Image 1 (spheres, rainbow over the protein chains, first blue to last red):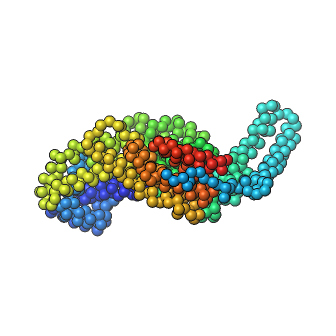
Image 2: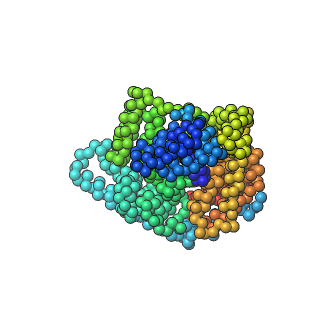
Image 3: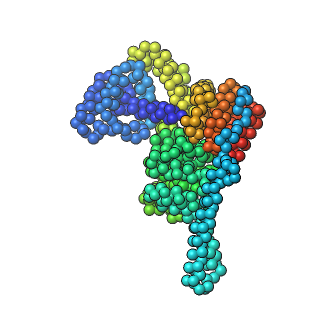
Length: 96
Length: 483
């Protein structure tokens, strides 16, 4: 049963670490825009800008790290994964 | 059905009270304790009476005489030792004084003392010596719950608390354990601001502080708690200085809520509702089956064939291979997540016809739960119950299966459970409980009684009369060793 709790926590984390949320780009954004935004955020994080350290979600702001940004860019390069993230992010867009 | 464990015997390791030719060690200790009480309280009473009598010179009225001669000594005798142990000695790390005070308390049975000592050790984050020799009882169960809570094994702690909340008649849950043991659990949850856990723990507790903490947890979770009720509880409760900042904040919040009428923005989209439920479950807060099923009903049009065709079209735009399969996998993913939520949800689902998506969800949840029970049965091998398996650990292992079974009762239906019962659970669990009883004897009596009683109840639900009778008899024997 503890595994169930871990499962739920992992699922929640996965949903709130949606690459579109992490990168703060629209689900319809093109590949070039995603790459550009990712590099901008990485540069801001490297410069230690406060605004880059958190990203908004419908459930409150969450911490953003360089690893999370890199993982988000990588996820969205895979079209199959992008399809899933896009679907979730599209639904969440209405809630914001 | 096997008959090997039809009835259990505790004779091999019979209760302490029955050992020996006359009194036995436990009897001697009890007699010595009674003698010590008589001597100590006799001297105290005599000195109080003598001093007050000399001081007042016979000028006291009837009420004051009763107060000084009866009420105060009675309070000293009954309540003071427990107060000294749990309010003064234990919080200040004076373990021996706490133990001595418990020994002097008429509210503490002699057989509870080792469990209390272990609980005090766990509460003070000390290694408990002699844990292996302890019996399984409410105190050790509370110690295990506290340990689990501190390890953040919140589900396990919740299982223990739930089992303590549903103890059968006769399974002792001492008043001091309800009061001070549960208090430590609730305080641990409140300290980390885990209000759902605090509210859950407080349900099995008693006392003024537990009552205040329950109210605080309720207010913190958004419940309507009048500030006056909060302040009144606070005024009557111990630990007022510690609780003051929290009560003050919550009382102010209550006034703000009453005046401003601020509301929380509800998660509007379907996806957001889904994640909101995941978040609630991840916080270990209770979720309702009807909420999960309502969400599943709302999901249906978003995941029907037309919606999946739209997703397939988008997959083609993105250049995804097997777009149809990907869309279907997404639907299955949502279904799996809902099944996980439904498996954790409380409350029974309505037995009315439901949309196809909801029926798929219920079927998936049922399969998940039954598979979980089948998989967990492997741990209940009576032949492998050894003395190294502490009776409390054996009981805690059973708690997982109990929780899984009771969840399955909400979704799986009687027929599926009856099949599972007759094809594995009954014999496996029965053999396990009998083995625990045989191996540990009276030390496991409390745990055995609880487990046998639960088995008998489950057997009754699935209509297994033989198992009902045998387990009731086993429970009766175990209960005999608790008295």
